[in-house]
Image (cartoon, rainbow, N blue to C red; front, side, top):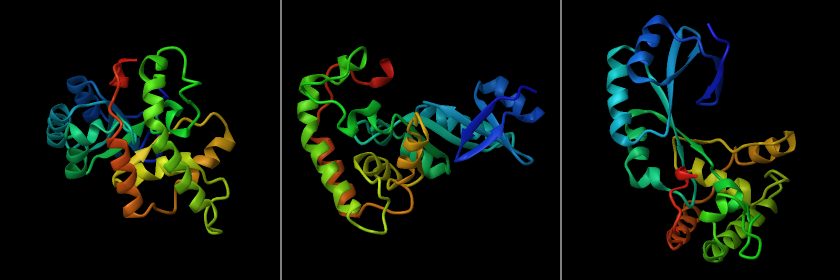
Length: 221
C-alpha cells in the first residue's frame, strides 16, 4: 500500500488501513492511520451531525474514530459554539486544532499599522486588529509572568500561552506550523504546565469582546 504518513493523537503512522477499514473508507470517504494491529480514523472539519453519524457507522464496523481536525483558536471558538467540541468530549474523539495561533495574528505579529496582506488582510483588518490589541497585551503579560518562573521554558512567550489555552480546554491537541527546529522547541514550551483557571477564563472573556469582522469564518480563505 501507499507509504503515506498521517499524524493523529500525537502519533505518526503509515497509512495502512485494514480491509475492513478500507471498506469503511469507501463508504465514508475519510482518512485512516494504523498503529500496531489497530486502524484509526482522522477526519477534517466535520460538523457535529456528520461527526456523530461517522462515529456510529465506524463503531458498527469495529473501527475507532480517533480525531476531528478543526479550525480552533482563542479568537475562533466555533467548535465550542456548534457542538463539535462537546461531541468530541462525549465520544472520546480527540479534537485537533489547526491554525491555533490564528495564522500568526495571536502572536502580535500584526498591528493596525501593519496588517497582513493577501486574503488574510480581508479578515484581519486594521479595525479588527485594533479591537484585538488589549487581548494581545494581556497574553504578553501572562507570558511574561511565567517567563520569570525558573521552572518554566526560557523561551516562554505569547505563542505558548495561546497554545496552552487550547490545551487547557481538555481533549485538544493544537498543531501550530513550525518552520524550523527553533520554532518547534518554542511551541514545545506549551507543554508540561497549565494556565490557572482564572487566566483561562479571563482570556476567554476578553476574546468574547472581540466581534468577528466581515470575512469570517476563516475557512472561506
